[in-house]
Length: 225
Image 1 (tube, rainbow, N blue to C red):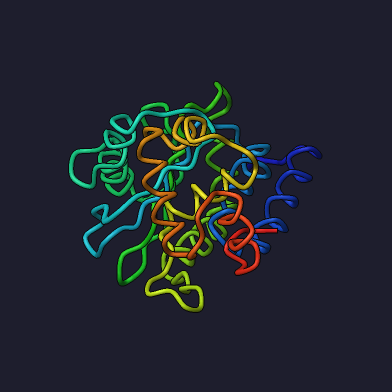
Image 2 (image 1 turned 60 degrees about the vertical axis):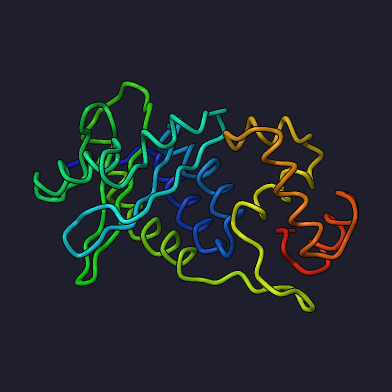
């Protein structure tokens, strides 16, 4: 039996309470880089949606480090990516929280599929302890990440479509003063791609510059307060 230390209990409570405040992608990002990071330090969190046969349908990486697009593709490719291989190994091993190839993994299966989570670059520690902590947090990871996938981002009044998740990510980083190059480094894309996203945001919000885009994004509640 594993007994949590006083600090671990404090961090776990903070993570559970914080999870209930997740209502948008930016909330999930802040939670993963804050309370979750404090309890289970890691470099990259990959969340994956599983199909009926346990195969990865789609995945998403959450990180604060600068990663190139090819590295993210190598992680998340639904057929040949590292996360797909880890999900298969996890399923074959009985679907228990575990450290596989130095990656902490766990998931949740349902009649229609499920979810799978992998924490990369964990510090050397008690693997059984890490697995137990992830098992305690699994319901919150499962519910809140899948809720983000299921929830549609409403289109602002007067627009013809909803803002994409990537466009909102770009706008959020711009709102805190990041340049195109800095946003590109954070998201693992080029500065030119960031500029293209911004041009689409300007058109969507009917504005002509980044300051106006941020102001309108706040007014429309597209940015977390």
